[in-house]
Length: 149
Ligand SMILES: [Zn+2]
Image 1 (cartoon, helix red, strand yellow):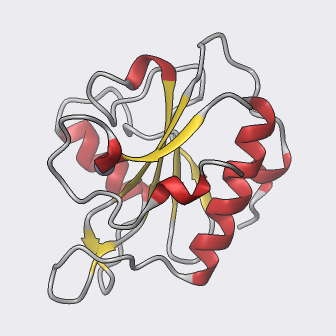
Image 2 (image 1 turned 180 degrees about the horizontal axis):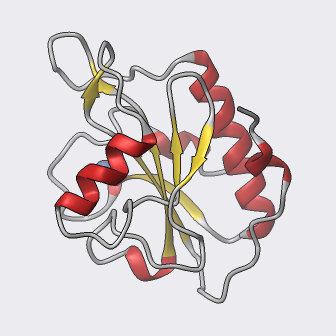
Image 3 (image 1 turned 180 degrees about the vertical axis):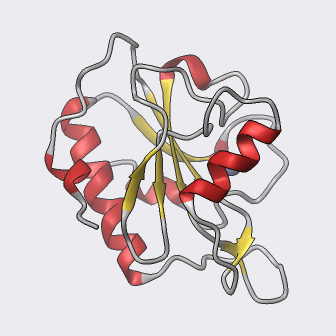
């Protein structure tokens, strides 16, 4: 599967975007958790669709989640004006929070953020845990290092 998403402008959006929030799927590095698994689980929780706009699997492929013009369901209080990106993983083999991103995932995430920053130059990049009131480790690494890409 190609990463065609990375090569097209995503600026087809009537929403104001000032925030890009990074998440992990909170699944173990040894567990396969595909975009279809995520979509199924989110629908089971009553969401209309997968809550994220992008989902990056361990092989570094970025999968389309919700269309960007649709409000996501990934960060309570911030969904209206943000984009949600999730990577597969976030827990080590014992289930502890850990930066389990593969080199392919890191590379794709960097490219996706650069692409999105072209379309939304004023958007801040943060991890889920960096938002006020969030009491989880998601995305299990310091996502703010991408703030200035
Ligand atoms: Zn999260």
